[in-house]
Length: 202
Image 1 (cartoon, rainbow, N blue to C red):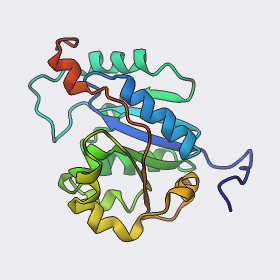
Image 2: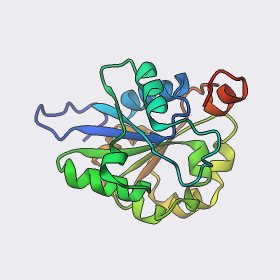
Image 3: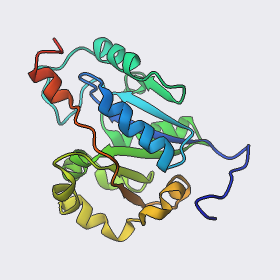
């Protein structure tokens, strides 16, 4: 199968999962989602608004409803879906959330999406080594993080499973473990900067 091979109408849906606090959601989230839709040939991207990230402090974190609403306002695209399903599933860690989604949506081919900043600390995630065996991963470039991410602990351990960029469009159908680094055009927006500038009040 080549990158340009057309897909069958009854092919399993390909869905990218972008998890995060979205505190608040911003144009950078939208930018990487649109890039993922195009480059990975996805049918949809789901934004999973986390009740509370285990790696982020509760101080300065807006409540789930406010963060969810900010994501709804930003994700104005027919193939981007905003969800707080982790609250319903009762999961806290990404590996558990992904496992639960795969049990519920048995035909869907999920791809986990993350920014380069998350790859840099990926080895600190609970059960990260289980996550890479559950779904392919796409890492999207982010200002100031590419070198640190690609030279970090997780990237080194996963290097043998990295696929070339020209096969990114096949990632969703690839056997796991598999991941790809996408050197997309960078977007300057960040939740940290928005909060620091006082444009987001908890």
